[in-house]
Length: 316
Image (cartoon, rainbow, N blue to C red; front, top):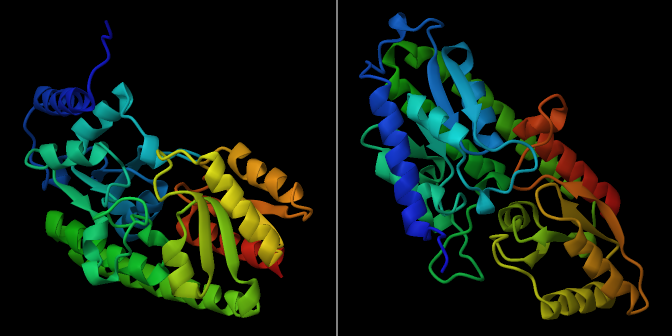
């Protein structure tokens, strides 16, 4: 007989652990920063992209911790004991939403009365969200791959920090303006780089379907071996279908992702070779996680510049 907990039981256990740890920590006035040793808000985020955004807008008034580091797949993520401690001590939590974090989203929804939680994807009008091709009624959560949508999320972060910490409102507004200006400069950079490729060459094939917003915003046809969630395994038929497409169109390069096993794309590459055409692996793209924090790819802007440069150089 199996002793494994059901997904619902796991969620309930994590919620109970977070709330218990928060209660044992004692009641504190979350808005009174003057009583803090370092005077900073304790902010917990799920992904590195959100952590980078909060750090840029919050500046010296926030201490940001991300649950998911480089190479971590948020679709498959499970909370650890260390995560429970971080969440219970947070003043405010920011997560993506739209089911990116899987069952973790239910944890955030259930603890929001004790600890404020914000889904940054709520900033995007639903008319601008893409639907999942694999899951009916579910939106694609990878909104950060359209920089203009990510700027909307930055506005929400700015506003929620200002509401939670009104004493720092002018500071958050100033930082938010600078960061959003930087995002629009990034958007212009991506568009200019993409336009160096002819339309016929703008075909992006990756390990999973994380780049649909990128494709819509910057004029690429996008195909992923797996669906928008890496929890959905790719089958032999998926590999064969993609290999037929690549060989038929003579696509120059396909791409692996830092948070998805390389073997998936290598299987596609081998299937294409069996069809008499050689497609190269054009590089590793960052999709659901940032790069090493010591490198430029450890920031959202640096990650996106690296991605577009890698794509254009491989497909040129």
